[in-house]
Image 1 (cartoon, rainbow, N blue to C red):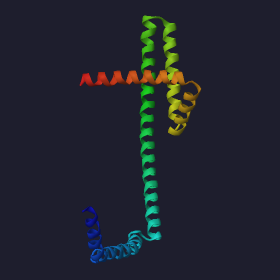
Image 2: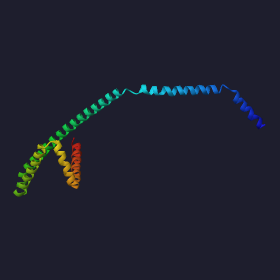
Image 3: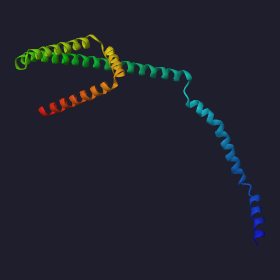
Image 4: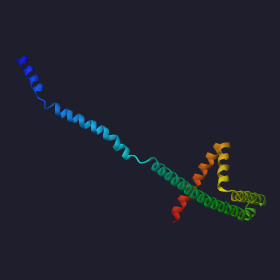
Length: 173
């Protein structure tokens, strides 16, 4: 019985010519689609001159943005340097004003130490004021290269002092 079923199925497949026609149509359609695809891709890509113009415009815009950012950072750094110089000058003045009180309370010798310290701080403020931001940054790099342990300790101490100033400033208001 199984033998009779096999030839019947084979006859049915052989007698159906309609199954071959759709396969041929599908093959023809895919061939047409394959030949049409490169044309579609070519249309989707912009011309070489247009991409060059876009690339040059993006590069130009990025260079303008970089220049603007550099100018902004330099202006902020210069303003910060001026404020720091002013603060160091104020510290020098404070130490110098305290020297008279130190003379009276502790002795003339210690008052002279305070005046000497005020002179040193004032000299530092003058040096800082005379240099531009780039020179100060290079000096800082050289200092860190020469003695990184001192630089890390100084950064930690400055961070501690700034944190205390911020905390105390927030409580007073």
